Figure: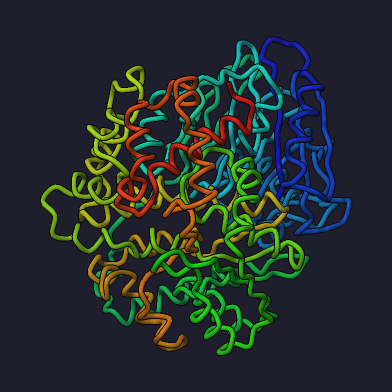
Length: 590
């Protein structure tokens, strides 16, 4: 896990090495162990390294293979790199390191851009051909690793974070109206290629982008999620599907133990993280687990320790429990929001930020349970969709923070045109490839919402402290398997039925049957005291007027009755607006 960046000149000029240095400096927290820049003709590649696989200097980046004429910067982890290396050695390739980065160089040389289809892991990389000047950029199937782009005449820059591109300079920082509609409507999810800023885009997941020396660029999608069973699976009963799922999950968990440093686990006490801990224990791993909790507000509980403690007791983990006083949250918000590559409204971002700070003192790698809800139908909106005659509308009703009329009421007149989010969801539900309404929603959530909310949140918050998070539920083979499972097995027992069915063999029922929880941070939902004062300052009449994004009258009404402005997903509308304003301030955007 690392941070990468680069500049490609398409006019024969030389890259701006001062801008490169600023980008690399902005990525230090993602890769605190080492760094470097390679300038080669019309391109420059930059890297910050977190040493996880092959901690020797032989796997330092940017990595150059002079014999093949290739250079690479890579962020991520390839879990099947040893198998690929063996196959490549059989083709006559010689290796000078023992890590996964060099395997990517040889694999590209051997198989071309389609080599990405052979990778099991999370990745974003740039490979440059010395002789042709061609640069190939790619991002993994589920978008676990980020890659941002900033285009200009005769130049393309890329980086693992949006703030790194801002550090390089010369970025159009005006607000993207389409992205603002997504942000305020689709629970802060802004699908690729858009970002909140007009001058920055992101490479879509499962995409290879090839940039020729003359600037000609093309993108190719190399993976899509298909729903419905394979022919041989049509005779499967519930027992067969359960066996297949748990075999797949075991493989996914075991793959994510590939590292030359210890691997821990984040333990919320929910079904997903508890299953990971159980299967890690089954695999014989030494278990370091970590939990976090906050103060309660009114009747809303701020921790789930009773459940995580039950798992710790069952599996005898070496456990660290972190209880955060509400007073600690406020000082952490500056760092948390600054660490966001894009503004995110979910309250638990600060929970992951504080937890990552603590966990990074003990381990460099953790497994985490993100993705199970979006892959195995764990959210409350899936079961009702099975009976829906208008699933796109019904999905929007429960997931969107506002309807379009509410959006128009909340934003300034200049941003009221168009319903980008509504049109996007309707189009997604109409796309062939998933027939059942629940599968349509799962496809949207697994390939779009998950990428630009939970997964991005975990990446940003863990990497703020040089901590690598691995997500077994997003093993692409497991995701493909889940998409083939009949809907009724997924939505059984209120959701994630097939997981709950198998979990009863290895987990306490109290964990499986508990109400669904998250990392709760009640202070950011029910704004009180200093939190409300902070939001009031960020959204003062002068600040709102100066920024020109929100309707002053709407903001005033929300400040007068904050508890009445809560989204269907229990997010604070005020917090959503305040995070955007704070994020813009943190990154010096006037």
